[in-house]
Length: 184
Image 1: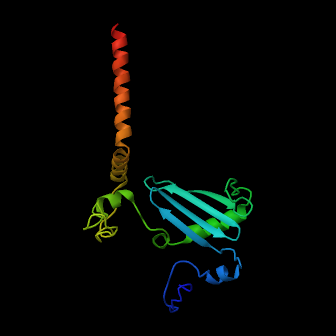
Image 2: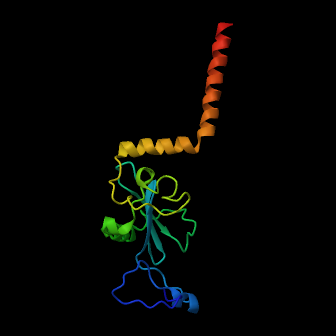
Image 3: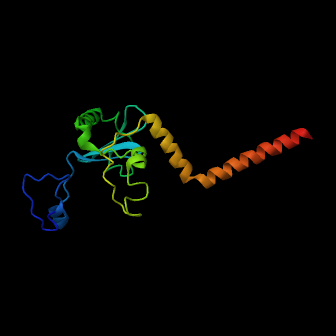
């Protein structure tokens, strides 16, 4: 907002922090409890605090606890070494912070099965190709885990139908060939 010279009041609430002055001055300020997250197939979240990054992931369709990994992103920018056991105090503090956020305020619930059933009319709203949803997405409850699984399976079948058809044909041909060889 500052870069575009847009004035806001203190009562306006926006996600994120204004980093425009940091870009102009080159002054790098380490993040303090900066959070990002996405929920599509997996619920993935990351919390950044100084040189530390706490990463959590869990499947959306399976009711399991998330797994956590702690990285020092200055010394390990490719995030190869999980330091959760070596740095238990930092891990505990960051885990407490990331789990303290209200669920509804953290990551939007983009359930692919829900979007498939109630999203943008499957083709892009009223006008073909429009990226906007018709507006009923939030009005409908998400499908159950079982329904979500079968919708997800259907979407995978649709996405890989040619490869799936080739695989099925290959299996049938192999089965037929073995059957012919047994008869001889």
